[in-house]
Image (cartoon, rainbow, N blue to C red; front, side):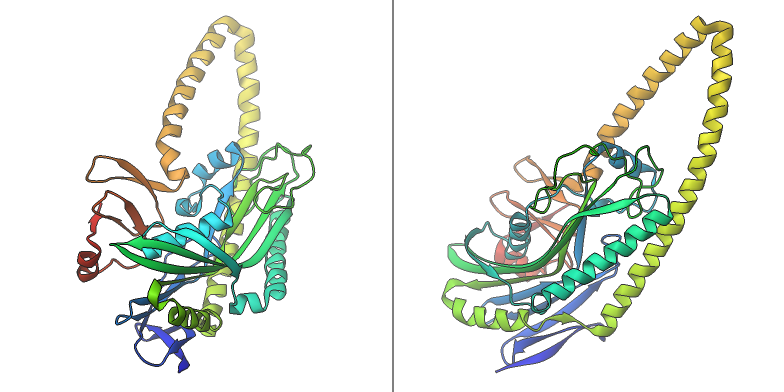
Length: 393
């Protein structure tokens, strides 16, 4: 028998979903750290049958931004509110889902079948897509008020379900992973530059003469920014002999899972507050940029007069200063490389360096030296002992 149950975290109702009446331990958590400009917090939920080793997981909103121009990446350094962990290179949805599934399953996986995910989001796919487009249009309207004409390109709303198989500790496992994937490509048609990047404009477009846009999401042109992620992720991990029972439980879980309406309304309120804050910051940056431009014009005239008086001496001094500046920027670029790519470097017990996403709160190593990043709470010692894992810093 399956019934809708509440997933609570510290007396706060986080979500609701159907879970079998007997044999499952359920729980939830709220991560109140801002994951992305459009994700003020997210929740995790689980339902675990310890007798049959069936594990069901859900994680709500997650978004990433991919900046396709070097100018934008450099501009982000001057933006104090930049969330570096939300910036990463675009990967195809199937690879993104596979990485998520392997992080939960803690084993390498191979895909064997694919279908549409029967989620609550998917049941209202057209309406959800229209709502997403309307939301971005509102952001673009803010951009235009801040002086940046931002235009959309490709957009996507699609629910994926992929079946995987894997082996761990000599046993065969089946992993079902799904997500309510969504994303938007956009660009600025303006020339020149703005001092503000991130949510509102600041885009220097070098693709104004580009060809027609690709129909495949993540490959459109012209494009300055790709925002992509998922409103929900779902993972089921089960020994292969319990696949049928786990599949039924997983599909019931997925088709009913949703964030509690009161908490979702709070999510929207916090997102709107951050949007307003970034908009105000954008205007402040523009005012600062205008003043900087006036100062620059004054300094340029002053420099011209100086060069007229002693062009040879001044020119030599300027070139020497420029060389030092470029050398300094080169060193800064190297130092920021790891932050921009959104990774941290860990060393396993074999002395190998491994890059793991900064989104991981904990990083573990198995006896073979394989390293896995896990978001959320740390695994308890009993589970670590069973997996023969150890946490590395």
